[in-house]
Image 1 (cartoon, rainbow, N blue to C red):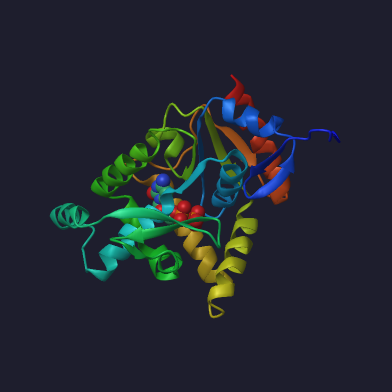
Image 2: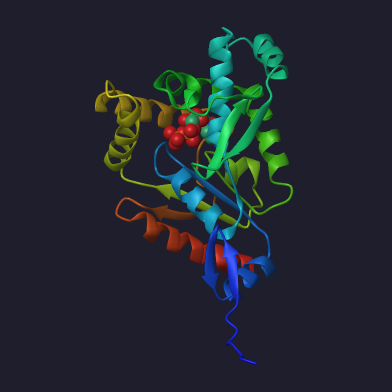
Length: 254
Ligand code: CDP
């Protein structure tokens, strides 16, 4: 009988890899909550997706939830400065995520309709920060986000995740990038879908949202005292991932 050397082979993230040690140890490690907060277009979602993929965690884009609520308000002519209208409208909104195999992340469902592409439109971006500043909208969003985190093993990005949604999260990262870099990145992303967009429009929108998000009364954007700052202005995607993964593994071993 011929004997073969036994090399354990495991399936991780749809790639066969040699050696189960890493996978097994990941599975045995403590499940944690990772929060990523920061200004608009600083690469939070990109990093959150990368981390979730590597750790086999669920990625939740909290901004998509506020964008979907904004879309609903716009379509249904809800005046977001009117308390009663907002409270009533929120009872008619059902938000959900649906995993999309081709993008490798989840699409936003608004009352069972896939609105992933629509919510990224500039029309929604122009109003989302006003809507997200509303007290009832925040209570609604935060409650849903907290429910999604009950089983841990999640990476959630947003503005108030480390301060309000999960103040006890094991790892909090505050992502920053140079404003010019952020404008350039968002412009490239939006230009692919809408060649009529100008860099000025993108810049104005980011500045306006950063101002409103940082200065609102309820859950303003700010760094949690125990968050680690990650400035990715001069980092490649791979470099930022390796840094954040190092922090995550440290927390998972504690
Ligand atoms: O992708 P980008 O950084 O431009 O924004 P986003 O994460 O899609 O969030 C869109 C908007 O939702 C933000 O400008 C905030 O006004 C709001 N938001 C919030 O208030 N709280 C969160 N946790 C996430 C987003």
